[in-house]
Length: 197
Image (cartoon, rainbow, N blue to C red; front, side, top):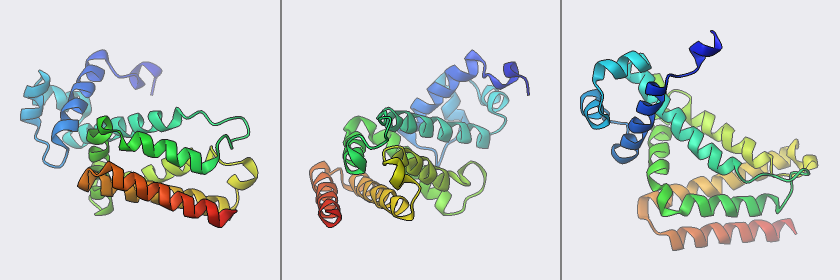
């Protein structure tokens, strides 16, 4: 594939952004091309031409959501030694981002894709959950000291950090109780720190 062929057209990029804004409000589960196309100023035929199929469009939207989430979390900029603030500080920082009300639509969309992937649905959902776990573990690993990063204990610690974040996030999306979910994250991190001392 040539570089030109791999680069999406300006129209495709524009429509992807409009479709993504629509998906943040309406979700992906019952996505119908006709109302989507109407909402974004296009037609089902154009969307199918640009994305290959409805599954291709859903896959592109999931990738767009994943890219936004990763960019936000990756902006933490680990220090050269990978341990600035440690894993606990990074988990707290990520939680603050996750808990921000402005991120609810993105995270609800993420949970929808994650859940459908866990159900083993074929097509664009396949592998989405596993990929996001790997993405997050890689990002958390970047914030561990190099000596810890490659160890079984290091993997266990970042898996625990991810479990804290994911569990609290699902609870937050269900209840919108930021104060309680944040208190729970803080309590678990405090116990983890004390047991590590």
